[in-house]
Length: 298
Image (cartoon, rainbow, N blue to C red; front, top):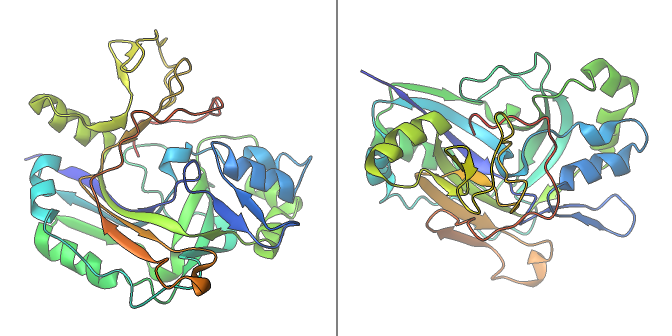
């Protein structure tokens, strides 16, 4: 019997939500397609640091759990639909996540892909009032997975360098980039806790039923499903070069959480919202994505 791979993670969206670095001049906010590239370039201009982030902006996430299940995404979606977990222990007047260091990634949860031996990550601390352990246990009891692999809380990280080979970890250290990251931490105030099927599992199952397995656009018969621009073989990098709309695997379950840099002034600034998966069909990107990305899975 077939098993399907899923990921539970906090999605961080630099395109729509951005992030803040308070230790740079003029209280810098980074937002947009190349937000992470711009951040690294400001830290160490002229060192090639700008090329370190090579993960497509729609796929930056803090992985919590990878699990396998016999359930197709549609079946799993029905099982978890009633879940309304409590994810905060009170008003949060601080970042939801904050970088603590840059280092080699300990694990790779990219379904079926060959990652670099030295993939790089930003390690994260989280607000003490962001509580997700109970939510994960609720999910586990409801879905009864075949396997369940959890990242230790002290190793929570977001992979930023996975595919490219321009800079080795040794070169990154020689340029003192990790030290600059520690001196200039970045803060995240919006996230989504999601359960995401692997791209292949989503395609296999949803295409059988005729349901959409993704948000935004993808390739259909060698053409963009949005504007029908011809996509050459191996050209697809998760975004259409013509209409600039992009693809994201559709979560089977999602809950949004937000705070605010000025939450201390606004007692209503914290929000935890159950919502349908974000519809990206009308979102257009302003710049071309880096060409060395690989999008075979989330």
